[in-house]
Length: 277
Image 1: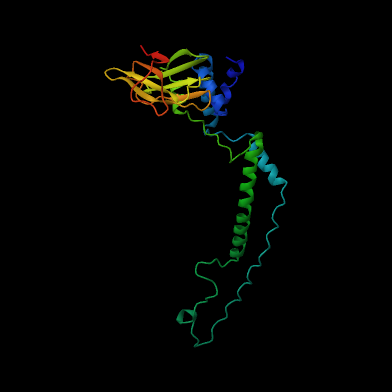
Image 2: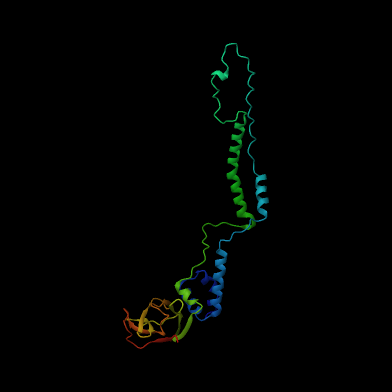
C-alpha cells in the first residue's frame, strides 16, 4: 500500500477527498486498524469543535467596550428647556363674580396626566438620546466580541460535523468482519456488519470483465442458496459497492461473471467466495 494512503485519513474524516481517493482509502481502511482508529478520533474531534459551546465573555471585553466608548464622539449636550413662567398671583374676584369652583372652565392647555413642571421636554430629549445610543453600543459590543481574542465570525462557514455515509458506517462498525481475497492482480475486501445488516465490497483495481459480461454479487442464504446482492459497476477500476439484501442472515458471499443484465441464479463458477463463518 502506498504510504501516502495513510496520509489521507484526515481528509477522509472530513469528506475532503476525491471519489478515486475515497475508494482507494476505503479499501485500505478495511485492512488498517490504525487508520480506522485515526479516522474515528478525527471525526470525534471535528464534532467537538463544531459543537455549539457557550463560552464566557473574554476578560478584555469590558475594557475594550469602555475604550471604544471613550474614543467615540459623544452626543451634543442637551438643550436647556425654559421652565414656564410662574403664574401671576390670583387677584380677588370682584363682588358678585363667580369663583372658579362655581363654573369657570378648567384650563385645557396640557394633556391629562402631563407634568406641569417643565420636565416633559427634558424627558423626551433623554429618551431620544438613549434611543440613539443603543444601536451604537450594541454594535460596539458586537465588534468587541468578534475581535477580542482573535475571534472571527464566518456565517458562511458550515461547521456541522460530517455525517457518515451508510458505507462508512459499515466499514467503521465495531462488529465489522473483514474478509480479503486476491482477484487477478487486485486484492478485494468484503466488510460485513451484522448490527447494520449490511456488507460492503471494495476493490482498488477490479479486473475488467469480458465483453458482454459483468460481475454479480451474491449472498449465500440458508434455505435459499445464492441470492443476488447486486451488480458491480464496470466504470473505473476502483469500486465500492453496498451489497443488496440482509447480510446478517447470510453465511457467505460470492462473485460470478454473468450477462450484463444480471441473472436470477449464478450461471458460472464463482471468481471469489467469502465465508462469514
